[in-house]
Image (cartoon, rainbow, N blue to C red; front, top):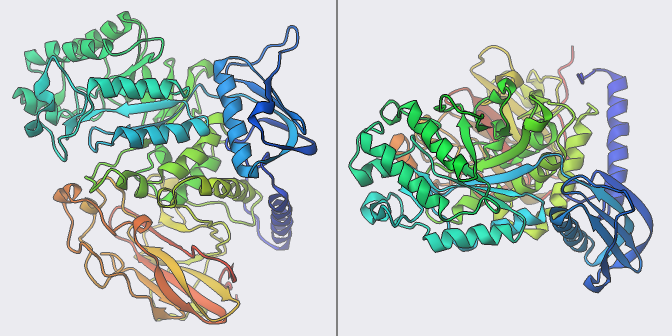
Length: 623
């Protein structure tokens, strides 16, 4: 295990590490910036000017074999020769060339690339049962997935607000009076169209009809109060049969039956679940179900389990499984928090190697949205695609959950891994719409924390801790991972402080968020936000010891269980303008005071424009 040392030796090592990384970053070219990072890259002399006519297929050497999905590129000044294990590998070779062309703006350094995926499942989930998305928006995301070698799209197509797949057998499921939030659904023709669109890009769709839980629309459509009503068995069987008629196991080999978060009135006899699973298997499909969830008893073969809560994957046994845990639920995490998860969380950490299928990150925007675009502006879908493409493709050697939510101290050699990954991530930001990429550089920040919430204590006299926090989202205590606490016990408040140096007097934008709402029932867990405050817990923001006023909130007073049906507006920092603050020339102090209340104890604070600014941690108290 890596440990943070103290004293001059550690400081020297941190400086050396930082200088080495900085030198590498300044020289980084397209080959070094690829996402996911190829497993083998050998630079060569020269440069190739991109020309699709100069890309030629090569042959494998006699007796040579490549792993499934593997490819090889030999880039020389006169063109590129590629070879691949299969059609999948060919698509990945093409995706790498597309990235190199964009990163190099048409000029690609010569070299040899050899690469292959470590996991066969690398994907993204969208919940369109709660919030419908138009086909064009889903197709755009499939295009991005293909660019970053993500190969599975899990289509959660039914949930409490809506059964979004047209049924000719039971048309009442699509009647407007039975649908919440919107009366939109996918026709069977649209359903097949998206599957074909994905398949053409090497992406497998996993359709998910979620039963027997999450079935409010289903029960409303049939006038059923409990899912153990005898009619349910025949109806669900008919819906799965109708689904199977739209699919081909060769193109869509998986069907997901949901089965998680089953309430008491939704539980069905276990033999019903078993019957549905065996019927789907008899038609040639592999069946996936959530874990934990209601489990079908007496199966001839185990299900594919998709783990979603805590680190349940540690308890996986003989069954094949997909990892969708912790920070892979991106509706709950801050965009800047993705960096730690992508750097230090190891997917599929247990079980036989052949059972570790891979990982899928999920977008569960449980709250209603005003427009489908809000799903991409209020959740870090695009940064997650880029970051998780790397870890889902390559895996990680260690599982460092202690760093989730809190990156290593920048004096720790482990910090260089996150800083380098962030550098590569930001090289890809220009390839996405700005509004869809809520991520800015954070690893140059230098915060310290003090166990104090008294604004009357001068900045220099606060009991700053030695640990330095080089990150934009700050967690005194993480709501998912208690083992990553920065503080012990239960102090009433903490303070984060940083020294900001400016090369001149200036007005600059500052992103501040003291709520860090999840887009899933975030407002229902805390007291209502009111005008004139940063959050309902009494958070304060001080620049040079003077309060920074909060925005004039568009929806003060919204809270409670009904808030999930009121779309978010400016409550999340990703969609509101930064505040403007005035910096003095030279030294400025910035501090956040965060009282401990409610579900999340965190804040986000960073400068999106850092030209002319440098950051240092507060001085430690003199002993």
